[in-house]
Image (cartoon, rainbow, N blue to C red; front, side, top):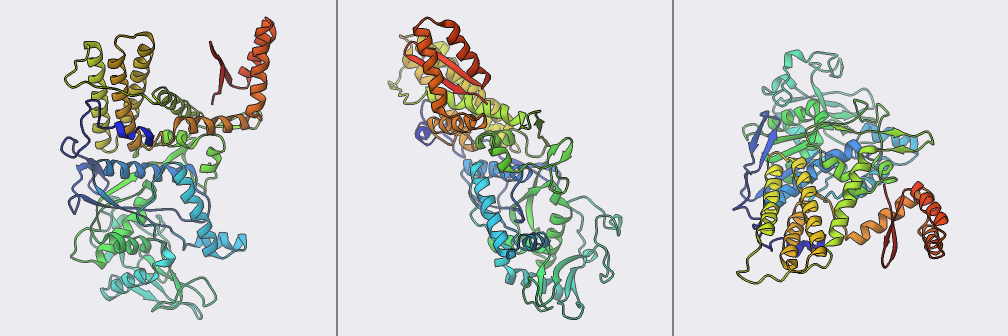
Length: 530
């Protein structure tokens, strides 16, 4: 797509500038409303996303969150905002410790390896790298400072550990007046046994751990309360404060994090920064990926890793499949288990066919040039098409700026591609109107390029995309390009010898393998479908 980017502001399309863009509004979980984004500092946005706990490879549910908020990042940048994007790495966790013991390696080694796999998977899906990617293990001093501040304000209290173990520190939930404002829960309704950990050493069953003591021979760090590890919630308070400051613009994550994780983040951060205002101004949460009406999760065993999907489908297909659903709604992840043992993902297959169509459209436009004479008039039918291109672009941007309405933008992208193909078909049939036809097609390309960049799709030159998908699809059926070429050449020879029965048999054999043949005056070409 980079080769086409120069055309973006040509061919009569409106410039992409803050002066002509609609207001950007986002749903705020804290207020339960869609509100205009009003950055704390004009022209700049601080964005924090809860990243992965690195004890295993990422599944499609993890990818959904990363893709949803990568779309947010791209929309913010499209608006011309300078985004300080922080996505943390949770590399200190009991799950990591347990998995490392099973694998016979150090927890930090396991976490670093899984973090790199996560980065690679998300990069394959077109997710931009964050400005900062802090690790818990590298921010223990910042975590300890917040805990000490909370203890000094009586917002937290220490509990001595057993002999040979460090002490624990708990946050006093009832001491924070606003507890429950994000999730809408009432403190009095949150009793022991209702998703809270029972521990007789706590003053109140609702209190949660800021620091968890451990033995001298266990994985941990020294603290004023003895050796231990940070609790889960405190890490994000410390790292967001370090890179964004208190009261930053947007905090994002999955809906499953609203309670208790994000609720606890708010409580401990605002208690530690008493009188300094809200912890984060806007809270955004993505919906779940569901398999058979159940949330995809490792605990339920109904998950498919990103790598499971990419073994069969192209990364851009998974990206489009995820991004075309509104980020706050559910994503139905269909799985078709065939009799031959193959596992097929019908929704992603359909998305890949859409990506094929869009890249085919780009390939038709390769090298298009348009010479526009100043003051030249467009015939009415082509002016109407040019107006439609502008309308589609404007509508798509408006949809994206209204709480990331990607579905409308994706629909506009497909209509733009259809309009471009209509113009290219006319271009082949007509001669006198070719400059006008080419101008409309190029305007469509300009809008398509802009929208694809915001959506994070069409990131490769068409030739590279077709080469990689052809190779992958052939491998799935045990074929190589040379084998297909041999059969295609045998069919050409059979047709030349007027052995049409043999030629038809070869065509049917290839069709059975999902290979489509195209006969042209200059020869025969082929492609492997999804």
